[in-house]
Length: 320
Length: 319
Image 1 (cartoon, rainbow over the protein chains, first blue to last red):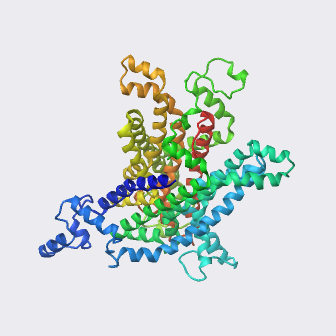
Image 2 (cartoon, rainbow over the protein chains, first blue to last red):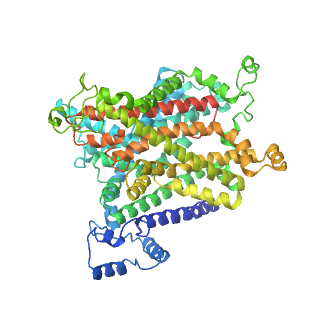
Image 3 (cartoon, rainbow over the protein chains, first blue to last red):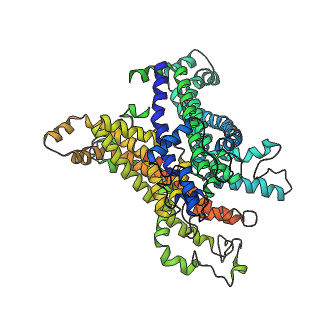
C-alpha cells in the first residue's frame, strides 16, 4: 500500500514539472510574441534607462533555463509573484477567491450526488420503463448542453422573468447575502453535466451488480426486491460512483471558469478569466498552477481511498 | 492507470473485417459473408434515434455548405450593418420577416445562425481531424516501439490529462489570439491523448498476433504493418471517438467564442452570438434562445449518433 502511494506521488512529479514548464513559457517573454519590456510596463513606451532596469530586475538578460530555475525556486516556496494589475501577491488574491470556488463546487457536488445517484437508481431498477428512457434521454441532453447557455437561461427564467411576473425570484449575478440564494443558480449550472455522467455510471454499475449471482441468492433467501437492491446492490454498485464523484470535485474546481464568468461569481475561475482579459499573466499562471496541483492532490486522495475500500484494486496495481 | 490494460477496447471487436459479429442470431449470421461495415449499418438502421440524429447532421451540413447560394437572397447579409436603418431594425422579436428576430445591429438571427453553422462545423471537423492525426501518430509510435518511447509519450499524455481543459484552452488562445485556425489547433492539441491511448491499445493487442510476425518476416515495413494490420482493427473505435469528438469540439468552440477568445466576433459563430447577448438578455431573449438551441441540437445529434455507432460497431468505451 505504501509503495502504491509512493509510486503515485512519484508519478505526479513529471506532470507537475511539465505544467510548470508550460506555464513558465506562457508568461516568458521569450515565447510570447512582442516586446517583453513593453508587456511588463503595461504596453507603454519607456526610456532606455528604465528598459535596462526592467530587464535586469526581471532577469530577462539571463538564459531561459536560469529564469526557469529561479521561477521554480520561488514557486516551491509558495511565491507566485505579484499581480501586474493589483500590485499584490498572487497567493493573497487566490486565497481570497478560493473559498467562493469551493462553496460553489461543493454545492454542485452535493446536487450531483443526490440527483445523479437517484436518477441512476431509478432508471436501473425500472429498466426499459418510461422513467429509464426519460433519464437516459435527459442525460444525453445534459451532456450536449452548453453550460454557459444553461446558466443564461436559468438567469433569465428565475432571475428576470420571475421578477417580472411578481414571483419570488433568485439573484442572477454576483454574490451577496444570504449567500445560499446567490449560490443556487450557479451551483445547478455547474452540476448539470456531471449529474448526467454520475447518473449514467450509477445506472450501468447497478445494472451490472443486479446481474450477479449473490443478488439472485439474496432474492432466493426471501428478501424483498427493495431490500435486495438496498442492502446488497447499492453497496457494491456505489464504489465506482463515489470514485467518480471524488474525481469530479477536482474537475469542477477546474471547470468553474465558464459558470463563474456567466454569474460574475467572485471565485478563482472568474479571477483567472478577468486576468486573461487584462493580460495579468502572474495571476493567470499562478491560478492555473494552483488548480492543477489541487486537482492532482484530490485525484491522488480519491485513488488512495479507493484502494483502501476495494482490496482488488490494491493487489492489481501491485501485480502490474 | 488506464494504460496498463491494453486490450479492453478492442477485445470485443470483430477482428477480421470479413468475420461475423458473435452476438448476431444464427440465421442472420449464416447468411452470405458480410463486412464489418454492412454489419454495423444493419444494426445502426434499427436505431431510430441514431438515424434521426444522422438526418439532422446531414441537414445542418447541407445548409452550411449551400448557404451562399440562397441565404443572402432570402435573409440578407449575415455581417452587413445598414447604418441608415439600424435604429428601426434593431432588436426586433421574431416575426414573419425575421423568423428568429434581429440582433442589436438589425441583422437577421436565422441568417447568422446559418452562417454560424459553417464556422462551428468547420472548426469542429478540422479540430477533430487534427486530434485524430496527432493521436494516431503518437499512439502508433508508443504502442509499436514500446519501452522508452512508450513511457515518455504516455507520461506526456498524462500531463495533458492533468490540465484543466477549458482553462488551458483559454490560456493557449490568449497567447495565440482569437481565430478559426487557432481554435482548431487548441482543440487538437488538447484532445489527442484519448485517441493516442485507444490506438496504442489497438497496436499492442494486434502486435502480438502471429500474422504480424509473418508480415514482418515477409519484409513488410513498420508503416505497412501499421496501416494494413493494425489500422483495420482500430478503425471502428476511431469512428466512434471522432463522431463524439465533433460534438465535444462544437461545445468547446462555442464556450471559447462565448468567452471572446475563439472565433473573432466579426465572423458569425454560435458561441460568439451568445457572447453578444449578454447585455441584451433582458430585452431580447430570442437572441439567446436560438443560437443556444442550434448548439444543443447539433451536439446532441453527434452524441446520439456516436452512441448509435458505438452499439453498431460493438465498441466498448470507458465512461
